[in-house]
Length: 380
Ligand code: PLP
Image (cartoon, rainbow, N blue to C red; front, side, top):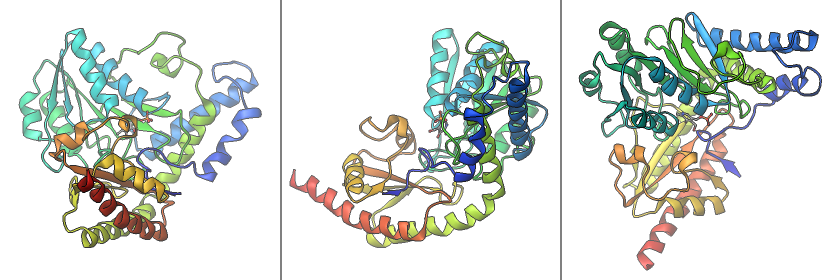
């Protein structure tokens, strides 16, 4: 199988697996225990936290380990809104469901939740955001890189404006798709809350983190012990957190090399597809995008059928977010950027393990699958 669905999840790097192994059967202590086994686990957690602080050059604050990106997003959105006096929450229209759905759930608690539109390339309308933000705004949440179309948002412009105009308002950035792929300047972008996830960067599933800038108040989602500064009760998943930190360090160290590999591979895909299908459209921004994500749409080809066809040819891709893969029709994100109903979208997402041969084979498979799926439609 040729795996081109790295925005959904990635393989675990063997170096990450190796870093985790001692924490299953040997150093299995509870990081809150006072005896030697607990001390070893607590030290591993501390080192993992220090690694994230270093890799992300974080300002003073807490790194709160969670079960993944979804929980980090939920803690940021629900936790910051509930701890604030403000009753207004702004989110971009293309946020991942972990932000979008949790923000909209706040409407039931009396919050006014406002969607900020994006243009056809998926870039958030900063003027609309500035017009919607007021002193009653508890939180603004805008992702760094979009998981479906790869578009990168102007988070520095948004964050610095918010800090100058509405210093009480909290700024959350979901960096799940940009960690290890783009530089993230938390200080310059005035970010108060930053979500990251392990399994998108060749780390294990079951670990993520929320950075909480010093002085930012959050209401925990659940009650329990005092772990993670009281913000995320529950015994920490030490092996996964150790693996996450190792994955983050590797992704940072190899970021430029990965980019140098992915930029030409993505360009080859685009050129090959344009040659085979002059009517193909690339979704998202032509230049401000993460190197590893390419979302394209083909007129007259249903997305679901295309994915099945490609699967039969040994190519694993998706149309958009894996967590909504079973829903029919264009996703909320594709609708927000104006992809019409009659165009089928395929998202190809690459990683540092993707090879040139795989790209050649994927192009060959698409050249066969698109006409086959179009022919099916004509026959019906
Ligand atoms: N945010 C974005 C942008 C994502 O792409 C994802 C994963 O699909 C998430 C949040 C959720 O992360 P996790 O799968 O670690 O819960």
